[in-house]
Length: 325
Image (cartoon, rainbow, N blue to C red; front, side, top):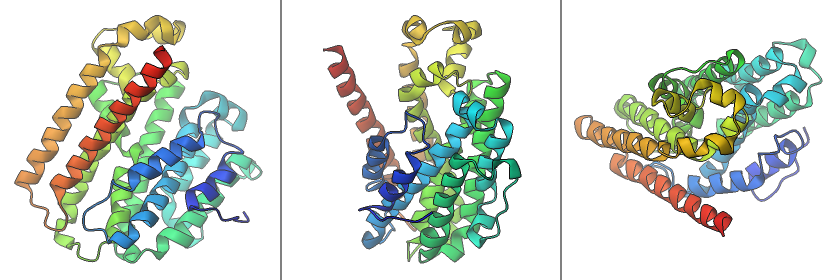
């Protein structure tokens, strides 16, 4: 892939990705993510790295979206090769270490001319090998980075299996299994790659905190995407599993009803999800009280995600008020 540079790397990649992307994947999504990533970083990150990290995180989010769509966007899966297509996309993430080393081999020769696969791989390979690998402490943290990416792949494979088999798991298990897909751990490890004073003894506690933030980001995102997930019959949605668990709807409703017909029944879910978010944020605060993290301001990290949730809620209310006019 010949790279034609734009103002940011994510815009460069998006100019190629948009040719194969789902119609839902507009540039405004990635612009919004980029703006959020400017503030969502660890306090130990050198200020000179913040714009670059925001750009790299947005690029990873683009890859995240591309692979996620290959696992739960039914029409894309059908036209692109079915199981082989989805697992080829997942394979890139499971084998990020091989992509980084330049020795990755496709798992399916039948997809050698698949433009979606080729475009995603070219972007991912360039991102890892040219840009992320050049971060100051990449070599030190690359093992954790590869593991975190594999966890992302596992969460997406979980979604794929649920959607393929049309089954719904209990809410708590869905949350546990899908959280990694938001890439908070991955992004936070990028921060560590640009943090001169991070102490290795803090890594274990930091990873646990990052995983909690993954849950926060995933649930917050679910509040705003559940209508599309119902439309796409995404059985891995935590909102759908919670709605069934609370007996707000029946399983058959998702097969036979339109979004409009079941939307009213699901209105209590926003408050339920908000309660879950508050519980997780509280548990994060309790965690940092009991497990010291010296290398960065852990409470500031938590407050950043509180602000992120608040801004999302405010933005959603603004959009709703405009729609209701």
